[in-house]
Image (cartoon, helix red, strand yellow):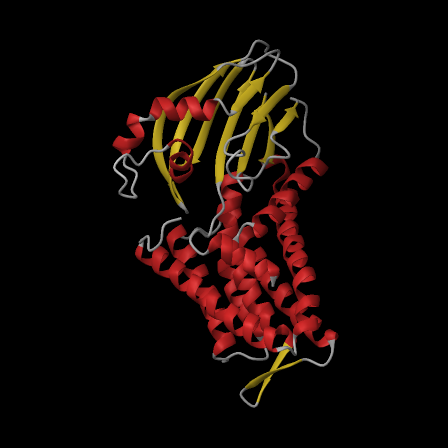
Length: 368
């Protein structure tokens, strides 16, 4: 339940963690880059909302674009035969699934046209340890993908071909990380896990007698959820199916809301794996939006896709491994049956209702 409390604390007002998207192409000494940084993150760091009305306009961003460039570029460093001076050539605004982003177009020239490339990234790490930079880097035709964190913000790349094993590992880590920061996916999973140690009879919930009963229930739920989101994730990542992000995000919020409501007013009691499968199809499109930001390397497309899917599964099982034993021990207590199960479901239902209203109607009910 500690995970549930953490998710609720971190995500009641903002369902998506802070990310920036950095795409860099290095060919010889020349550097061309695009860096998408959330407007809310820039406002948090240096202030953009000059009139304090809670909305950031293009005029407010344009008035501070020199400050934005200076702030961002002071937190990004490239070296190839020495430091590569970088400058912002233009700035635009774009939208991601979680709001507006400033798009910085960057260019530079390195002292050397060959050799290793060293990258240093430290955007927002001094303010938000959960911030991540999603990097797509091409060095003389060789592609690299990385998640830049406080522990991996200093990296070295070479222009030699990246091994398939390295690419698989990178996407495996991506999958693990993105299930852990996908708060709506986690709350949906937790909504299905909460009743796994309980049996509904006589209009009451009772604790299961054996751990094996709870484990089989969870195994069916997680396997069904994984199978479903793997199908739609693969179809969307390969470009065979595409749905509007607003529709997908709204449907994901609805799935969380219905799963939590089913705990309070049970309609589906014994085959929650069916619910997990049906809504897992929608969640797969949500994972695909993350994968689209990262991109799939053409030379190892299938292996990278498998790695990402497996990473999501590993992330889910880590949550189950922490949650299920604790829930089983506490299953017969009033603390679990009322404090965690009932009130946890109510709180998840509230959060999901807010998400659904915001996403479906394009509103902002609460500030992040």
